[in-house]
Image (cartoon, rainbow, N blue to C red; front, top):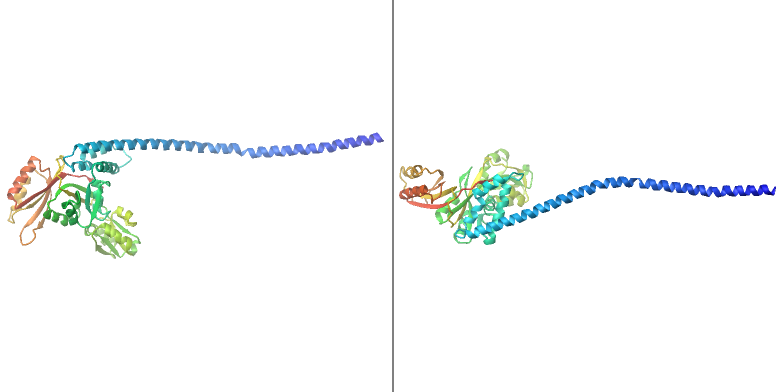
Amino acid sequence: MAKKSVSKKRVAKKRVAKKPVARKSAKKKKRTTSTKTASRPKPKAAVKRKPARSTRTRSSSSGSDLQKLDREIVDLLNRRAAATIKLLEADAKSAYGSLDAVVNTELTATLESANSGPLPLPAIRNVFRELISGARCKLRTHRVAYLGPPYSFTHLAAIERFGKSADLCPVRTIAAVFEEVNRGHADFGIVPIENSTDGRVVDTLDMFTRLPLRICGEVQIGVHHHLLARCPRSEIVEIYSKPQALSQCRDWLARNMPQARLIEVTSTSTAAQLARDKPGAAAVASQQAAAEYHLDIIASSIEDNANNVTRFAVIGDETCEPTGHDRTAVLLQIPHNPGSLADALDAFKRNKINLTWIESFPLRGDEVGYLFFMDFEGHEQDPKIKRALGELEKKAVRMEVLGSYPRSIRAS
């Protein structure tokens, strides 16, 4: 009996001993299972990261390519500027000769033929304009007076002609532009002379009769007017702008803004300032003025003539050399007799000269008669132009050659 009881105890002990072993193995299995479960997402995460690494690599490669291009562009621009400076130093006899490069027809033709896009030609021309402007200022900074304030259309014409590196100085009137140049306070001036909608700018032509300045060049700007304000169109009760701008938009304003009162001011920039500061006010001005004075564009391109162009004269004391694409301007007074104008104009016909513009305005004071402002194709040094001027002078009471200068292309 004793033996049996001992054996039973041993069996019981064995059974008891086996149980913990079974639990441990179960725990191990659970741990192993949980470890496997936790490790399953790792391959997925690794797969997800691969495209991110690839994108970064491509982005880094693109950035490196752009940086290389940028360095090459900067190097080429500086080489072009150095060549321009060398060319200008060789042309010491004429300070103005260096300015012709901005509107040089050969340069424009080169840019046009070389440009395959996607940049439009005006954008390419702007780059070269500023490059040449910066190169000129390495030799001398030209001071240019213009009819201001900033961001008027005359200011935009000054930028188009001289670039932003020039010392551009706004003045309040056309007469003040002439005075600044005549007194030597500015090297050049820029003033509006003619508009395709309104015709002549009387103040400019009148100043040519008063002061002995020459026309050294021209700028043609495509003029696009916009209605600018800080309030909705329905709340606009006054519209400000210079007389010429209001005139160039008269039909649109009559149809679309009959409730608003039109008020003339000295410039489109002054109008923009008033629209910014005065409740219920709007301005007719440029897109650049909208950005400068933080105004909304209520309506775009409201000019009645889609091909509205203003021609600006560059005035100074310089004489331009012939380029083969020139225009000459003359101020002429002839006897106030029947047929005298026809006799004078016959000089152009005989010499086969294309007369491009003629304007008349009455003489001042008690004297009866008219002054005629003319311009025509050709340079005063051309033989046929010399002959025609000689014939005109014989029939004239007064004749002044206001200058020969390169014809410009239209800037949009």
